[in-house]
Image 1: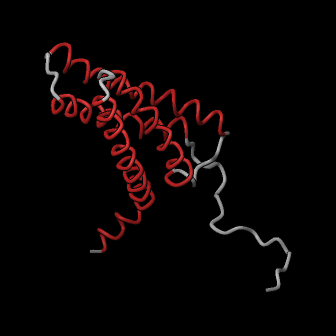
Image 2: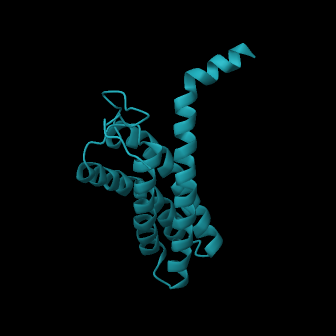
Image 3: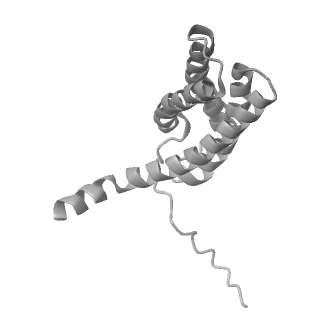
Amino acid sequence: MDFVRRLYQRFESLVHELAKFGSIGAVAFVIDTGIYNLCLWLEWGPLTSKVVATTISATFAYVGNRFWTFRHRDQSGLRREYFLFFLLNGIALLFGMLTIGFTKYTLHLHDLLSLNIANIVGVGLGTLFRYWSYKKWVFLEATEPIPVELPETGVRQDR
């Protein structure tokens, strides 16, 4: 049992970070899939639907990951992070576009189930790329420890 405790302590921050990333990702997945299917229902086409769905779900994911998952990491500027975040999401979008395009135009599967399975496969592949790339280029390691509590200001507040 001591081995398990030491192993957990060694990877505790990674486990928590992955749990938060997964939670944000799960909500973003629901947003993505819901909007993707809404756009398909509106007959926007599978690739256009994917771009619209990814843009909206990625915006949610940025806010969630910046202010919850990776809040302990340095903040290198909103413009820089937002630009890199969406650039990397654009690359990850290619995974979805390729799987959906392959399903529709190569396999000639046009039904809703096939397109949704292709979307799920693309989201899965894109998620692996996004987690790795966010840690590497967007949400950088903190150069100084970030305090858990705010420092005392010396100003007393009477109630």
